[in-house]
Amino acid sequence: MATVLLVEDEPALGMIVKDSLTVRGFTVIYACDGVEGLALFFEKRPDIVVTDVMMPEMDGFTMAEQIHKSQPYVPIIFLTARSQTADVVHGFELGGNDYLKKPFSLDELIVRIQALLRPKATAYSSLGKLLTIGRYLFDPAKQKLVLDEQEMFLSHREAELLRRLYEQRNQVLGRNDVLLELWGDDSFFNGRSLDVFITKLRRYLRGDSTIQIVNIRGIGYKLIV
Image 1 (cartoon, one colour):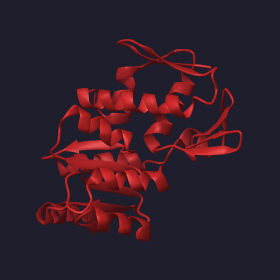
Image 2 (image 1 turned 180 degrees about the vertical axis):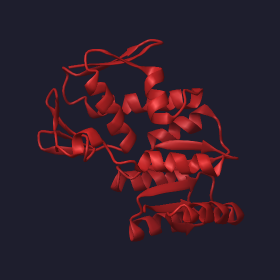
Image 3 (image 1 turned 45 degrees about the vertical axis):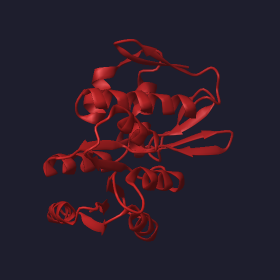
């Protein structure tokens, strides 16, 4: 079973979450602030990070940014009472994969962890198939983009979104369909998250001017190759 790094400065909540995850079969490493969490991340190499945002010593956003620079493919879930749109968007821009507002259901947290740890791109992994997107090679199983021997590693959700765009290339990929499949619901906050991920994919693909991800207002997105 997967190893979870849990970073939470409220000891009572931290123990409840840790015990719940342990009962479900996860190995849980617990830290009470961002500095300790970052050190344990590089020492233990967990499969996923679940972290509070507002913490002493180092906040969750700063910790996530440091993790993402070194290991961009490790999924990160933020737990926080902060609900301002700017905070949510900022968290995703720093490499977060999901955002759960306090108070939250432990069952919902577990479902979201399982979704992010689900085997990546299973449709391609058994074949080891590489996809050609303009001048890029895309490996969905390894969540990797390659351009002129330069490698970029994507997060799970970035890779899944790009895979869906590729499968529907030159056609419209429905916005609501993506939100329901990858985020679980089409709430406002998840919609803003999707917008951030589209922006990040555009940035990754800007090395080939023949590739575009076009916003079809109110409907979805189209990958034009």
